Amino acid sequence: MRRYRARGSHGFDFYWHKSRRNPNYRVVKRSTNAKKLRAAVAALKDWLKKSRSLPLPEIIATLKRKLQGYWNYYGVIGNSEQTWNYAWFAKMLVYKWLNRRSQRKSFTVRSFVAAWERWQMPVPQVNEKPWPRTARQHQPSPV
Image (cartoon, rainbow, N blue to C red; front, side):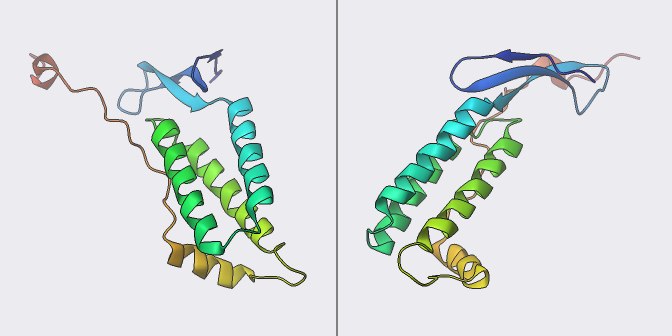
């Protein structure tokens, strides 16, 4: 199926996709604009690079707020793949820049995964509510 993407406003691309309930029915979906995703990853990288010398609890607290803010804005229905991409990039960048705080590694991969769980970083989630169904949609179709 060909995707016709339209560059939308506010950092989203809009495209037609088959409905999950009825494949003959098409719906408009939203996805994070690739340019906005790259910019957000670059901004996070610059922030981590600049603030890696801060105390670790301060870095973690600010990072939690940054991630939650990203989920709040981009956590819309149909965009979970891109929010999980950002989460993966964020995790890899944090691992990279926290290991550059001194001459030796601060974390192994195992210890970092354990620390990530211990820090209770927010996970991507959809914060948008679907449209309410009308009474007409709840009525069974006459046969």
